[in-house]
Length: 294
Image 1 (cartoon, rainbow, N blue to C red):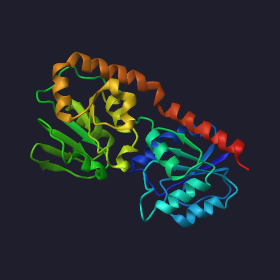
Image 2 (image 1 turned 180 degrees about the horizontal axis):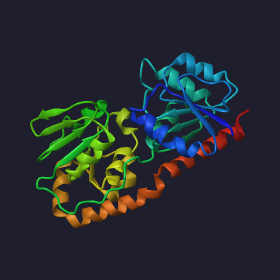
Image 3 (image 1 turned 180 degrees about the vertical axis):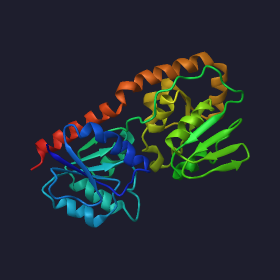
Image 4 (image 1 turned 90 degrees about the vertical axis):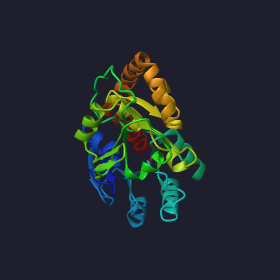
C-alpha cells in the first residue's frame, strides 16, 4: 500500500479534523496506509498538509520525496501571520484541495497557475425523519464554531434560539447556549423546528466556507433557513435562502412544501455526501498526484 501522511495540528474535537480526516480514515485505510502526525514523515508517498501552521514542518515537507497535497478549508490568505506561508505551500504543492468552489476561486486568484480540486466535507450526523409539526413562532437552532457567532449579531428571530457551540451553557433572554457534542446536536434538533445559517457575504473568510452545516441540518431532518452564500446555491431547493424572519414566515405558511424540501434534500445528499463518496474523491486526488509527481 502507498503511504499517506496527514500532517495537522488539529485534534479530534475540531470539525476540520473530523470532516477532512477522521471520518474518511476507515474508507481510505482500505486502499492506503494512512497515518496522522504533527510533522511530516519522510517515508510517506503522499503528504497532506491539513490545518497546519508550522512553517518549519511545512517547508520540511516540501523537501521530502513525497507528493505534497495542501488542503485548505480556512481562508488565511490575508492573514499577516499565515498568509505568506499559505501562498508558498499552495505554490509549491503538487496539488491543492479545498472545501468549496468559492475557496477554489480565492486560491486561484491568490496563487495563479495552481492546480486545485474541490473536495467537500461528508456528513457525520444520522439521517432523522422530519417532524410534520412546527411551533409558532418556530424554535430555531444554530450550531457551529464560536468564531462564527458573529453571523448572528444582526439576526432577528421571532422566538427561541438554541445555540450549540464550544463549551458554553446558559440562557440569555430567549437564547439558550448549549455545549457542542454529537448527542447534543441530535437532542437539540429534536426540540427545534429549523436550523438557521445566516451569513456575512461581505467577508471573504465567510464566503469561502463549505455547506457542511446545511448538509448536517438536512441529515437531522430540519428545515434550513440560510443566508446567501455560494456554497448554499446547490441546496437552495431544499430549504429557504434569505433573511431569518422571512424564512420563518415562509415555513409556517408552507409546512407541507417544507417537509417535501427536507425529504428531497436528504435524498440528494445521501449518496453524494456520504463518507464513502467523499473518500472516493480523495482517492482520486491521491491517484492523480502519485501518477504526476516527479
